[in-house]
Structure formats: structure tokens, C-alpha cells
Length: 253
Image (cartoon, rainbow, N blue to C red; front, side, top):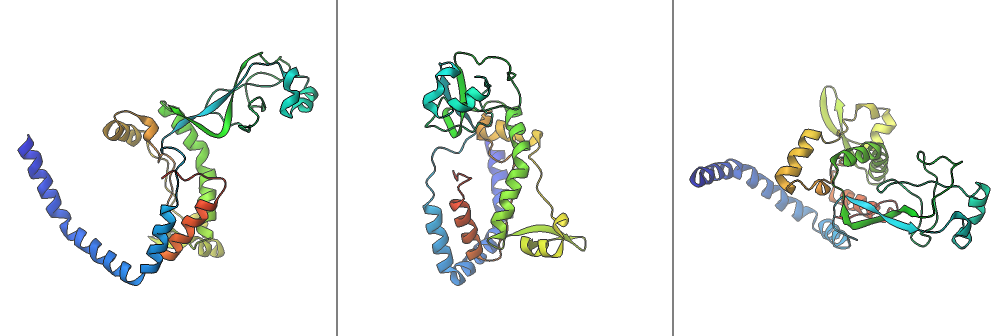
């Protein structure tokens, strides 16, 4: 078995050697023409400082153990009083607009405890923009639900980034796919011609989690994905700088 596997590996390497030579030749030319732009791109990448490993985590919980009548020190007493001292609870992983500096601040949910019911004496709320690195997500169903909800929001972000850097997307032109600048597609009213990537299939997600991550679904980071293509290195660098400056996203890798 070992010998057969070795032979398959050698045959595979031999088949891709010609492609590797072409790839290396392109990089030599690219570096010779765009040395300064590549240096700037490299510097931009080095400035990325991940806050935590790139995995799928549950949100942090902020515990509370007091009745709503004791919330006067949180800055939400007036709002709580106007609602008759009522609130809602939620599970982990659900979006919440509550800050780390105010762990007792409660937010209204689209489902759950009805407003006419009294809030419990104790419980927890998830904290926005804060993940629990000790609690990786273990449910593939949860990841797909989150990806489905995120996809339209993420696409809007990608389009904004592309518009600021002359990014391109694959679009159908006379029956063939060509990479066209988003600005040009907008101007010509041809946004419907773009071929957008779909969510990763459940079959492929299961396959990848088992083969590459020994069943750890928290390492699946591309259920919801997209791409921007650039004609110049300077455009790529400009886009990356725009992403890093975006306060609504966090770059982890």
C-alpha cells in the first residue's frame, strides 16, 4: 500500500510540473514589474493582528442576577421602567446589542418571553462582538443557519470593498464568463449577470470537516464566501486596506 501511494504521488507531481513552471514564470514577471506594490502589500498583511484564532465560536455571556428594578446603575432604568420592568432572554450565539461595559443591559428579542411576563431573577445575555474562545461551535446546523443569514449582508460588504478598489466579479458576457469591474457593471445595469458563489454544500462541509478537521466543524470558515478579482497589485492592496479599516469587520487571518 505504501509503495502504491508513493507511485501515485510521484505521478501527480510529474503532471503538475508544467503548471508550476508557468506559475513561477508569472510570479517572476509580476515581481519585476510590481516590486514596490508587492512590498506595500506585504507590509499591509504584516500589520494584521488577529485577536484570537480563526475558528467559529459562541458568543460570550454576560451574567445578571438582579431584578430589573435594580438596573438604575446600568443606564437602562428609565427604559426598563417604561416597559413595566419587563425584558427578554436569549440563548448563546444569538445576536445582541449589549456592551462589555454594561453586562446587565438587556435587549429585546424577536422571540422568547412575552413582554407581559416578568423577567427572571437571574440569567445571561450574549455580548456583541465578543466570542468565547473556550466554546467553539459544535453544531453544523447552527453554522449553516448563521451562514444563510449572513450571506446577503456579507455580499453588500464585498460590493462596497470592490467599489472602492476597482474590484472585479465574474459576469456572463455573450455566453462566457469574464471578470468585470463592479463599477462598470453598475453603470451598465448588468449586475444581474454576475455569477455569485453559493453557500458551501452540506455534503462538502461534512466531507471537509471529517477529512481535514477530524470532525471539528468550528474550523469550517467558508460556508459563506465570496471573491474579488483584481487586475493590478495596487488595487488588491487598496482593497485590503479598506477591509482592515472597516470598523464593522474583524480580520483574523
